[in-house]
Amino acid sequence: MKKFVMAAIVGTVFGALGTVQIAGPLVAQESTRKASVYEQLDLFGDIFERIRGEYVEEVDEQKLIEAAINGMLTSLDPHSSFVPPKDFDDMQLQTRGQFGGLGIEVTQEDGFVKVVSPMDGTPADEAGMESGDFITHVDGESLLGLTLNEAVEMMRGPVGSEIIITVVRKDVDEPFDVSIIRDTIKLTAVRTRLEGKTAYVRVSAFNDQTHPNLVEGFAKVVAEAGGIDQINGVVIDLRNNPGGLLSQAIAVSDAFLETGEIVSTRGRNPKDTDRVNAVPGDLAEGKPIVVLINGGSASASEIVAGALQDHQRAVVVGTKSFGKGSVQTIMPLSGKAAMRLTTARYYTPSGRSIQALGVSPDVVVEQPRRVEEEETEEESAAANRRSEADLRGSITNDSMTDDEREQLLKEQEAAAAAAELRQDDHQLAYAIDLLRGLNALQGK
Image (cartoon, rainbow, N blue to C red; front, top):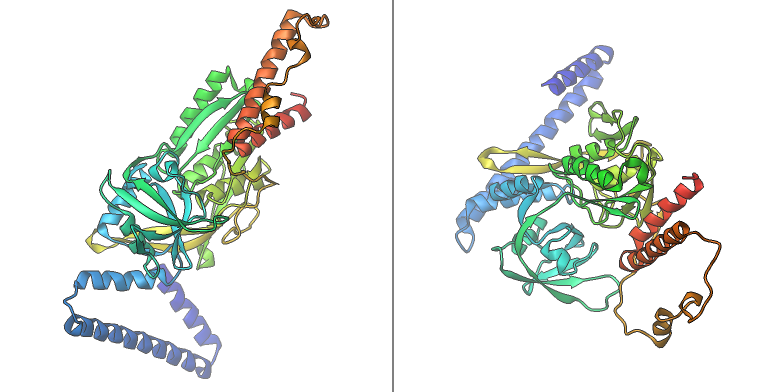
């Protein structure tokens, strides 16, 4: 109602200051525009009646109307869509952290379904799906020409049933098939553990559980380490996190910021701009932070990475993020349906929009593909290489005490563990090395 009042006031002011010659054409243009809209609506009604009465087969009127509504919404952008009642129920379950399916977040590009990211521990993740994969066929049927909702519907099915999807992957010459068994997806939003002296925080989704899981998990890691002073820093892993609830992205960012803006959202009307600021309190108590991102980090993940990066609270490591910088509002409709409508863009504290650009890491670190190869003779020799200490009768080092020798052995074991981690997860190993270096520079 407020918008209509404001429009009336503005029209009155212009009418008073201007002349009839100015106001007249404006009124005429508005009348013409409304007449054109009504004509188009009449045209829609005419087409609907023709289809219902003359199409070669009897049509489902409800499906026809839903398809028309969905077509109107999907013509706006890839993220606006109609949500039928069943899908609306599934969406509400997903934000609570449990739903059925394959466990992949998808979007649409060039007519095909593109994987934003597989979710941790889900059937799609275990089957080897990767961010950036294109899904071209489901059980041999092409997805070309289908809407995103229609393609997703084809991938749904009973828990325990098999689905064969055809995948096109960058740097792989030919399309290939992937078999996935559908399952009930139960997401653990946050997992934490100690990696040496580093607190590792894996955030896989932004749902209702994320911030509570973060606070609880971080407290356990600190207690395991023997207190916050025994931790050299924090790695926040947002790789392949497709996003989720804006409120949870704000809460996670706020958990590591003492002050300042976290994010701003700007809608069509400049007066709808909303800014959210941090409140005092830092879970890490000032310890250095490294944030890991990649091409599967989208939306809410990018809000967190961008906020911590702009405030120089964290070093962002990895590869450029997905670049989804828009906000979707779920609007319930009659009949228990809803529509997902893009209503705003979000901006990082420095005022940058990451829409279609993504968050650029401070340090670019690619994750090399693991290639299983037989051990070469040189590698085998290196693994079995002996040192001076292995030689029979070698003299001992008399410059070290027993305590110092024990400390050295611990450091060597830690270095060996780091080397093993580097082979298993190069980006995480780099982040931990970076934190170790930051602490060395600070003399801690």
